[in-house]
Picture 1 (tube, rainbow, N blue to C red):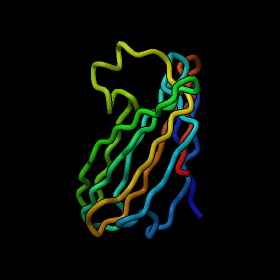
Picture 2: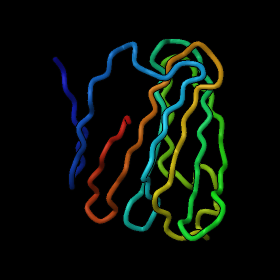
Picture 3: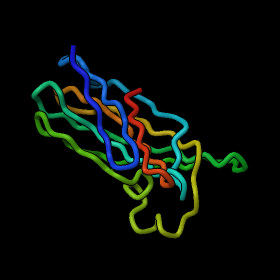
Length: 141
């Protein structure tokens, strides 16, 4: 049995132990819902390659304003080397770049992660940070 915990001065987050065989494979998708990117909560995301082989990942964000008739969708592609980890600390900035500074708060975002190439396995994760307390939470599902 093993356990881990990430902790900063104000709070922390439990880090679960995963099987060495964990991860999405070619053609598999994982969806994270109810994500916030606002003045109250900062959401980051990332991927870890766990099988020791390269993989290409497509991250797609769906921005659905409940009063709008259209959902905005955009995506980015990342290539992971064997055992590589990529972390993007700001969800919307990773898609919108400096344009993010001109946008307001967003709630109920959806992030879809899909392995599109390679023989690697990818574990996607979300780290949400409460801007008021500094507390973090880690989501794998």
